[in-house]
Length: 271
Image (cartoon, rainbow, N blue to C red):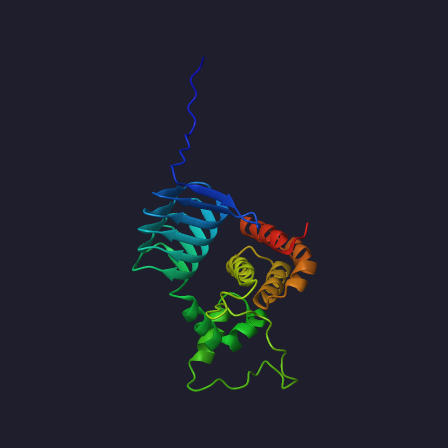
């Protein structure tokens, strides 16, 4: 009989592998963890070792935790990464909103987007530029965002009225929920709201990354901007009625958009 060589998968004692209600995989293992398969995860955790994402592997996760180091050689999109050291190797790309680490090492050819130190820092920073964030859907084009923010943040003192915004009735109060709720963790439904917010945050990171895709057409860009607008304002009703159609208007599609579709379908309970 011809001998066949197949890869061997070993699941160490103490490893936990679960799937949450949104269909996201969680892996908790006592030792080192190497990710060689692209996927969408909720939590990736090495209790006493390191986590590594191999080259040419695309990983999207809500949270990555490692007692020692997190090595990225492929592509990572995550809401939070907590490790002693975060290392981006040659050619790696990472979109990390919140990072908790003692050290950060980047190869000269690696690319890191995001990288706030805490939820409070993220919340305060976004609040400082709330005017610019509200205007992003109207100005998003290659290079326009950086120029708009730089020109407005350079002037001392509080920003004046935007020339692009007519003096009309005041805008409705934003519906976005707080990113942090330090005093409400025991409130009924807090865990459910926090989980929903984490999913929407990951969807937002992916959509913002998609806006930088050179192959995105004009109609597709408009659809992504509309989706981002609803995600930023927590408009679940609007998302439920229109996300499927808007995603269908984005050409060419991508693995990231496929993951956005799956996350919103599970989160909103649609088909």
